[in-house]
Figure 1 (spheres, one colour):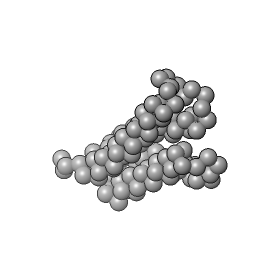
Figure 2: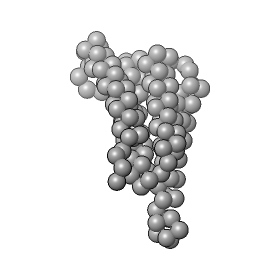
Figure 3: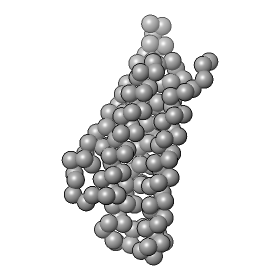
Length: 135
């Protein structure tokens, strides 16, 4: 089996973004003196939810991407999935951290993320069907 090269790249980049989002939540906890939850503080709620949304979507997308890479899908497909995911997560994080009313960008970030998940799911299903049918 060839070494995995695409998924580790995007996993590493997304891990850096996760670290940044986590640090932002930790800093907010100290600033607002909130141990658990969001303390009912609207701006801090946004930061906590942005971080939580990342943890709710990225693992599945990376698992799908990894499985697609392990089963021999093209590098172009994998870079497409990873690029959509990274772009979506960056736009989404920007919206939660630095804007309060840019709903269009927030929707765009989620759409890019869902496209990445959908393409990853489709690639895995296509591979499974091909292998099951011997095509």
